[in-house]
Image (cartoon, rainbow, N blue to C red; front, side):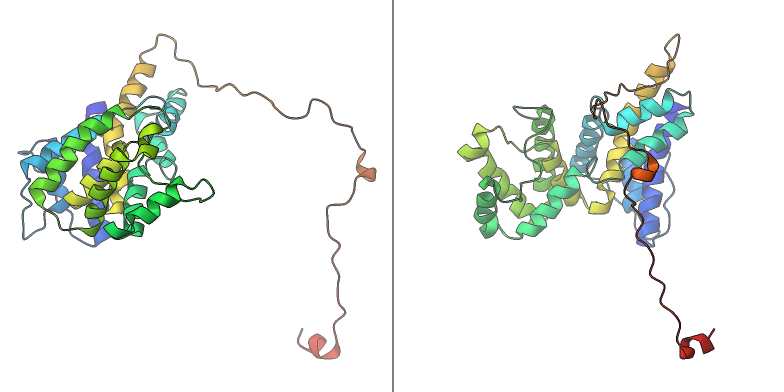
Length: 288
């Protein structure tokens, strides 16, 4: 069941993409492997078959592996909490996908692309770097540093190689990608970023790589869900295999007032604003 669900995720993702684009759905090809089949369903059309470049295939394979699982983040914890009630894995995966709805989880690489588009051209990078260093400016560079990794994101070293390999092979002439390459060079050499360990993370490189391959920004979180489904189901199976499964009950610590004075209802100030009823004139009354 778990393997079947993992196999269905790329098909569902490709169907969602084709439907959103108003294009015919492309059926899976059993002669292709997991990555090739997904790219085929995404980019093939009834009149043209997508030819998968080896560099693109390897890059997507690395992307899926690096995003398969990553500790107890929001979506993974959601899957485990839902599964602790012995719910179906299909329902649990749906709950994990639902937790990706908000922009705070699963959309970091999407934010990178939007930032690159806001910067626009290479000559504007110094101005944005200055803004990032200004503590009074709300602007911040997306895709740099990580909440978990205080030095550097170890995944970024791996995906950086694949990102640059894709850029070399495809030779995509994209202004946002030119900005990304120049911004990476600045961040890796600028003392401000080096001192604070604000190195480009996995989301920075994955956003650039996915754009070069041809994925629209709207599909980035979907790709995250496809990759993370492996980790979600692994977490679910681990929990389901426990001899005595226990329902999840996160600990909650009350931090409110320890004592409050009680005030009887008649003595409490009214929170209801009294309505002011205006009398009807003869003209308004005649319309009733």
